[in-house]
Image (cartoon, rainbow, N blue to C red; front, side, top):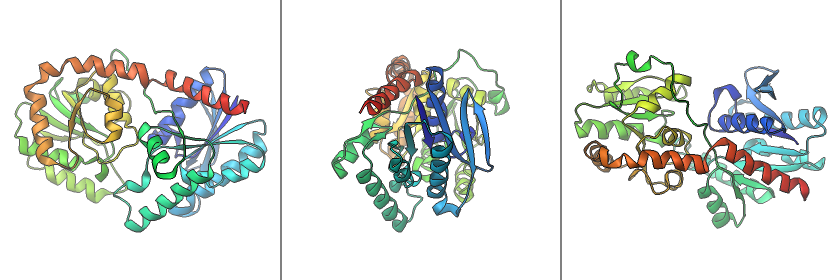
Length: 368
């Protein structure tokens, strides 16, 4: 089956949507399907990645119109160049504004939600109102809706009275070993550090984590903050200021590939004190590496962890401090969670399993 994916940035950047498209398309190709990915980029180009076609479209229209305009451009390109494609899969409400055009030509439309974006604190109140309205409009119009977490599925049913199907994000199971010198580069020891890994944005609360670590006065362990955010350098500077007087707070910048896997596989505990998540990929990755995980008690994190993990109240420095100390003092008792975390990923969040769910879903749509 030929499936068109529209939405997301350069697939090589591997953000949330990009990660989803890259890995799902790879699995679909390996299972005999023909995915074609259209993405926002800095160039107009066609390439092949892992055997599937990727169409790069250069950004147009500025910050607010870009996704909608590129959605229309990609839809038109697909309609004329990939005429035998039956399924058009749109990521996020911006590109989905072009779905009507594909529907006119008899295509089956799938809208996928990757998170409740209007909840993000980086947006002004006015922007949040506009984004929630666009979400409402999209959900009301679209017939076939999927979401990456059960939290979103439940929200759409409760808030909008619209049923959708949960097809979660997933991770690739880790290798046995990785070639990387990142531990030596930052003078880190195996299981000698708590790890935050992700974008340095306010919704994920790395500032609360640094404050809690400073307050805990933990000796013998470091706190590694791995990530970046070129869009908000002022916040990044603020984080560095929080850790400037504590030599045990280490900033590595953004990490990828083997460096990222090495940090995950050797950390003492993984920390994700977010206020908002879709379904957190980095948390699933840490679980796949058999790590003890500390996470805020928000629905998305609890959905990923199941009955495992050390939960903390979000945006609460005192509770976060207590839980950092709790993990330090009870680490041996928590060891049992490592294997349980891994098994939960194997049972629910591998790309092989998720791609099977997706294939079953689109096959059912194609038969209608």
